[in-house]
Length: 639
Ligand code: PRX
Image (tube, rainbow, N blue to C red):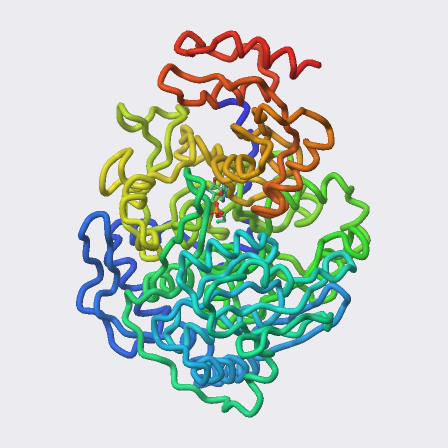
């Protein structure tokens, strides 16, 4: 516990507090009656066609918020700002990796969204059809999401860095008949041929239309009758498309994420609760004001981008930056240059990026004027106090509070987070549950004592909570509600509460890794490995990494006819990258004769993890069927 707690506490700077939207602890008091609290937020943050009959309806483990309320997410992000005279404000400033800039006012974004919504309709898309979107960080990505939301077609965005096979499994699971993709895009100066990857992913699937954005201008094949260019389908379309009146509980989107099995699961988010939750946290946690320029560096393909680049900021009439490329292209000060150029006031990024910037050295940020910054945020993984302090001192110049926001794909919105005008910060702690939310740290015996490690559990329903897993009811119960029962949402994260009630997040427990802020199931990597013809069996564990937080380490048992070699190792690493995507690449592979197993045949990953971490004491091995293998593996690791 001692090593977790930095002695120094950082209260909000006086001038920040003075101007902050939320200045006092009263909001936590108000949050104690959570239904009333969220009802007030629903009234103040969202425009409704019809108000709800009931704030919350519980049919465990399913929850409905703002029952029978009617609204449209795209209307709340666009139309209402134009109607209230705020349409000329910039919604997005997009910067391409090559330095191109495209700016969209709310009015312009509205027009693009409406045109594309009409295009979707003209292609036969109906309310309820799930549209898969496989686009990099270009403006057409949020435009496509909002257009889908406008006509009531839920979207399922697949991160562009994911492999063809990852795309395929998601398109198949969602049953999408429409895919939006692009020709190519830039990464560190090179054009990545995205269309080729998309085509490989959907080969043999029965898609009605594939809409292709022209981004890089590379030559790509277009399949007759199926593939159409984005520019052609919006040509001549009206800039007006009536938003569909959606029920509060209509599906807004699916977001696939890693769980404990080899197959990613489709987390379901519905319209009203998600909008209320993201709009409120955006406003309170980021303290957004009219003149802010906000930049979240996440990819829109992850939940962070959905909630805090698209829906949260737009529902607050905020101006956001979207950057297409890599942080070190053409040089390691690209991010800091962008902050200076656009006078960014709020920066939201991941600890892994901060650690990388730290490694590159402060000369890069110091070349630029970062004085516009007034608030910093982090998300995605625990931030070590050293990185926190560097972020605070070098980037924030000691005058910007840091909001370390803990949440996950399933929560849709921030759950444990400071309020920057209120909370006294402790570096490395995400501090307290957001008003209206209760959380505890417990184990099978009950709530853990102060300073004791346990499972983080959320004990009140919250509006942006997932509504289930797509076509996977049993899995939904098993993953979140079986460990502690209904009413106690099992997050899968370890945590500690300290003597002042601060929450310290300790990362994922069990079979899910967090690689540079990206969630990855060990089972996914294992199933990718065993899909290779040379592999008989594989076990994957996470090991600590200075920059990425964690990386996968793989133990592989080869088939009889395969021989261990460096070439095979490289081939297997490449294979995993192809099956899942580059983030899943094992940092190393150890070929072994066997894996430590219990008598019932269960692989003891706990032992493998300790071995990979170089720990001398691997704990109890008496329950193993093959205890001798532990010594053998230890020896091979030392070699
Ligand atoms: O382990 C937690 C970690 O990220 C996981 C959720 O991953 P994902 O669903 O991909 O969403 C990431 C962006 C919200 C959590 O289970 N995590 C997220 N934020 C933090 C964090 N761990 C510690 N501190 C955080 N602030």
